[in-house]
Amino acid sequence: MTDVNNTQTVSQFPCDNCLRSGRCLGSVVVKAGADHQRASEVTVVQLQRGQPLFRTGDAANAVYVVQSGALKARRTSYEGDEEILAFRLPGDAIGLDALGQRMQNTEAVALCSTRVCRVPLEALHRELRSSPEVSEMLFDDVGREFERLHEHLQTERRPAQARIAAFLLAQLKRRQRLFGAQIDRFTLPMTRVDLGRYLALATETVSRMFTRLQQDGVISCDGNAVQVLKATALEAMAGAGAEERAPALAKAA
Amino acid sequence: MTDVNNTQTVSQFPCDNCLRSGRCLGSVVVKAGADHQRASEVTVVQLQRGQPLFRTGDAANAVYVVQSGALKARRTSYEGDEEILAFRLPGDAIGLDALGQRMQNTEAVALCSTRVCRVPLEALHRELRSSPEVSEMLFDDVGREFERLHEHLQTERRPAQARIAAFLLAQLKRRQRLFGAQIDRFTLPMTRVDLGRYLALATETVSRMFTRLQQDGVISCDGNAVQVLKATALEAMAGAGAEERAPALAKAA
DNA sequence: CGGGTTCTTGAAGTGGATCAAAATCAGTGG
DNA sequence: CCACTGATTTTGATCCACTTCAAGAACCCG
Image (tube, rainbow over all chains, first blue to last red; front, side):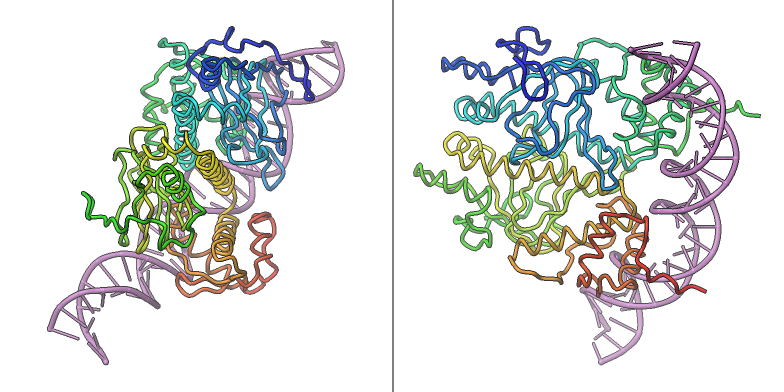
C-alpha cells in the first residue's frame, strides 16, 4: 500500500514489531478497539530520511507514535528559515498540537529511516469514549508534551553552554529510559544545524560548545556519536549556566 | 465558603455572571452534567491581586477557566527567579499542562481581582465520556495552548522590538475577540517586570522598547493604558524584526 | 576522485544585559 | 492635603555572549 506522499503503510498489526508495544497511545487505542470487536484502523508508516510524515497545511486527521527512528517537528520562521520545535524519538507522540485544529501547523520530517504508528483521530475520539485507558494515556502524552515545552522555554533562556548540556542530558536520560539501562553513549540523529535550530543557537556556537565540552573532558565525541564522560558535570552546567566553567581551563598560554 | 488558600468559592451556578457563558470548557462540562441530572461540581473562585490559584506541587485535581480578570502562570528558574510562561485572560483555560501530571508544576497568580471557574478533573473525565462536546472543547483548548506555546517560542527567538510588537498585537487581537469590537486601546494587567519575565527581556529593555514605540508614533501609552495608533506598523515590526526600523530615527546629533 | 553538504575555527560587530541612579507613582498615615 | 516610604519605571553608560562573516577542513556519496 502506498499513499499520496509515497509513504509506505506496512502492516495491519501495528504493534507486532514495535519495541514499545502496549505502552503507547497507539496500542491502547488498538486494544480498546479490539475489545469491541472493531478492526483497528491503526496503521504503520515507514519513512526514509528526509521524508515528511505530514506538511504544514495538511489535514490534521491523525496523531502518530514513533516506533523506531527519529523525526523533527519544524516550522518556518518569519524570516523564512526552519525552526525546530521538537525532536521525536521512539514512544513519542506526534501531532497532539493539532488536536483542536483542522490543519497541521507544523511539519514532521524523518531524520533517518523511521517507523511511525498512525492513529486516526476518528478512532481516537471513538475509543476515548469507550475506554478510560485511552483518555489516561492521551492526557499523559499531552501533559508530557506541555512539560517538555515549558522546560524547553526555560532552556532557551539560558546561556549556550547550559542549553547544550541540558540537551545532551535529556538525550541521555531519554535513551536510558528507552533501553532501561545505564548507557553513556549514543548517536545523535540530528545534525549540528538541526540542533542549532532547535536550541536557537547559531551552528557555529553549537560546534564551539561541543569542542569546549570535549576539551573539558565532559564528553567525547566522534561526529554524532557522543559519549558522556561526566554526567554530573553536565548536570552542573545545565543547572548553573555559565557562572563558573569547569576548572580545566588553564591551557592557553 | 472558604477553602484552605483563603480563596472564595462564590456561586453554585458558575456561569450566571460569566461573560463567556456557554462558550468555555467549564460551561460544556456543566451542561453535560445537567443532561444527566447531575449536580455540577463546577464552582467559581474569587481571587485578589497577588493571590495564587494554586502553587507548584499542589495536587492537580482540576482545570480552570478565567471568567474575569487576569493571571500569570509562573515557574521558578534555575537561578531561582520568576519565569512567566503565560498570561491568562477571560476565556483561557488554566492547568491543562497538568492533565497527565499528579501535581501542578506551575503556579497561577492573579494579577488583579479575578474570577475563575473551577472544573474538577473527576467531572471532566466523567463528562468526557458522555459528551462529545466536552472532548471537542477540551481538544480545542489544548490545541490552542500548544499553538500559543509554539508562537511564543518563535517570538522569543526574535529581537526585542519584535517581541514587544508581537505581544501588543496579540493583546489587541485578544481584546477584540473578547469584546467583539474594533477597539484600539486597553489596559495591560501586568507590570513591565512581568512582561520582561514573559518575553525573556530585561525590564530596562521592555521600558526602552515602549519608549521607542511611542517616539515612533506607533502607540501612545500612559502607564499600563496603551493605545495602538498604527496597528500595521506593529504588524510589520512583529513580522520583520529589526532589519529596518521605522524611518523616524534622524534625531540624535 | 570531484563536488556537495556538514563541521570547525578565527576575527569582528552588536543587541541586549547589567550596573547605576534618577524620576515617577501608589499607598499610608499624620 | 501633604510628607514619607517602597515599588515601579525610565534613562544613560558600559560590557559581554553570541551572531555574523569568512575560510578552511572533514566527511559523504555517487
